[in-house]
Image (cartoon, rainbow, N blue to C red; front, side, top):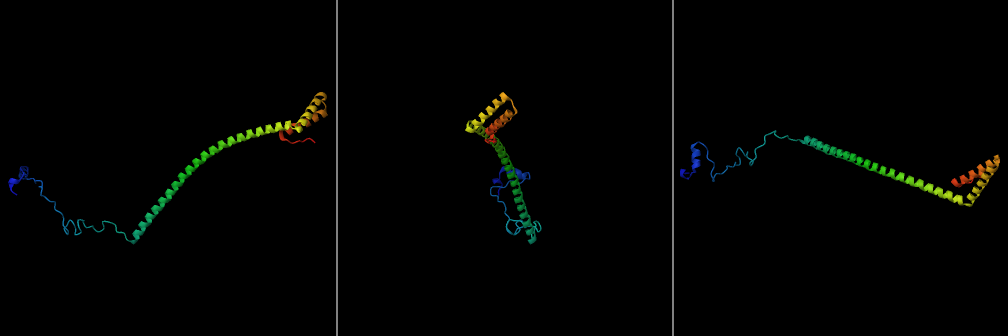
Length: 178
């Protein structure tokens, strides 16, 4: 190339002993097949012997067992953790159900007791108004007035007998008088 076509900056750089940057028609050299860099197989460098472990038949079996044990252990651990989480959730649900059942049981118990008391009061009233109840009430009142007038052993015994029978009939509906 003639010096007249050169860039003045490049000429100064060459004079100072520096290399000039490549021009527009500069090409990067590529390695060719069979050269030292390519190793005869394209652009790859040949692998050195012993740089990677070589697995034989027994090593593959050991690797398979290790992977299988790892997967099985992971599955077992996952199942165990899942069952622990499920157990925790079940305990939480059961405790909330127990609280609800306790409240409901208390409410039902009180309603049953009120209902039983109401039914017992209705039955007492029905027995009091029945013919037998009115007869026992009349006999109790007669023996009480007789005892208040006479105050004897017989009047006291009969007053206790008929008034007790009357009160027992009102409470239970049974008649114990002979």
